[in-house]
Length: 202
Image 1 (cartoon, one colour):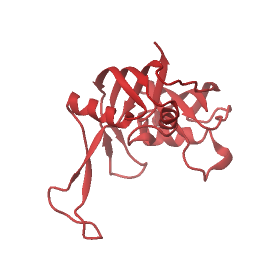
Image 2: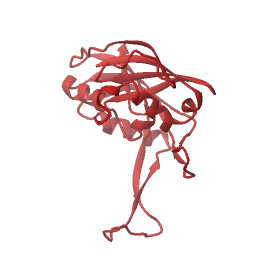
Image 3: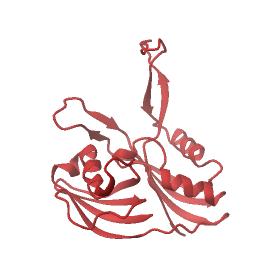
């Protein structure tokens, strides 16, 4: 894997959908491949945003109009059972509920929708469930972030997610399982900068 810092400029830095598209351009060798990168905005502004990106492939070093690669290095995971590490995760914790109006889909089933989790207890329970069998949480703090609005250029419909930042200390229960989770990301909203789990020594 690779860990990179990328500067996103222009209107793309204000729209997570366009930010995702700009990052895709750093991997031009196989445009039909599945997305194999995760990212998190570390610093944001009206004209530029600095992004931390984790990818399975090495990003293109050339500057793209909206995305400039600042630095990139191989990211070698070295995890051990029982290891104690600090973690940071920007996630989109949600639960699925049935449509209150009773509307049905094409199969005659009641429609379902995702709603954000709000209470701290719900957020921590959600995180523990995602990490179950992979790591145990020793300490954790939750901080709700500003809502992220995203939209496709030329479309009126606007989407919104409510990200939450989790930070604390965890103990590794299964290094292989946790490594798989790090590579795949946690929860929905990965295309909009959520789901990347970062680890560091205590």
